[in-house]
Length: 504
Ligand code: UN1
Image (tube, rainbow, N blue to C red; front, side, top):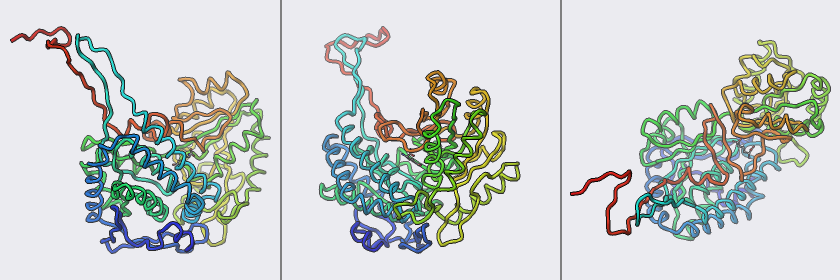
């Protein structure tokens, strides 16, 4: 662990905020990051308060003044160098993600790869921040739209993707010409510090240290100050629906903009003609991967009656073989939950499920060993159970049976969240029915692929209580810029639009 922190240059992790240079936290509070894999303390960080927040914003604002006038392709070149830094440190950064949040090493490395991919995408975007030009109705006039940087963007991230979700936002915001202040989850401060330092070092080489700010602080002081701060025209927030509603309310109160990526309640429908091997693997990765702690994790499974028995038996057999344990170990497929609260969510969730008549088919146990390990669980339930409406951020999968695909699609959509969805079928008609306007109501709809593991090339986000935001994907830069319509008159006359006459 020490080696990793040293190689990442964060062995002195104590201060709570960075605005180019580290600022010691002034709240007197310390947060310790524990490895969920064995419960050991990894390191402690002093929390920053509103005083440091001010310093971070001031540094970002001053760097933004110069950054916004740097040509976008030059900004892209600097982001390219950040991608290179992450490539160089991929192994250590990926291992740190695994140590700090407990996802298996292959997923820790995958997360850093997602950020590297994001850097590549953002570099390309830096030469494609297109505006349209249009024909004016007035002679000797030209009209076009151009996009300008927004300003200092606030970025709030969750524990489960402590590196990549920041990258989705920050790397695109940087090529768009913005500064970014990051408030990471207090459950994953080390990954944030390592990522921030790496990218700030690149900025420092070009004289822009402080353009990226990091503030490790509490929700009640720093978080509330940040979302209410008029100097931040955009707040991008990833996390629970409860948190998103609060952010949305405060930001809307000052007519700021929000980009929200909140809870999911993702489902897979399996049709009788599906390739069963493929579907079982897709469901297992979706529901067990990251110990069910992705916003895209599969939580509900709709099985056609004719295959439900065989599918469930095979899935339960596969679940029982899942190697659970040290997430750093190459053979492990499921690591721990993030903390003791998550384990309580799991045990309480199972009680609530059983109280409503749900039947546990496998799993349902907390492992008696250091760390926060539970067994992946399959539950037979009914779509009308009240608990099904809630996102339990743990590896519990509900299985439901259906006869008519119309019912499956109706139940599929009958939850407050709308992030990711999938159907397994070899039928072109069924696949298209699922993707039609009256099919899946989610932001992501897949065929013969599970609900999680999206590529960064596509817009990511969802509808309803998922918050409506889209991050990553081809035109995501628009969220981080302001659009300006320009009309230029090169004639010697002043004709008015809509034929209005006003001659004086
Ligand atoms: C999240 O869980 O917040 O599609 C993000 C996926 C990943 C991103 C998940 N690319 O599962």
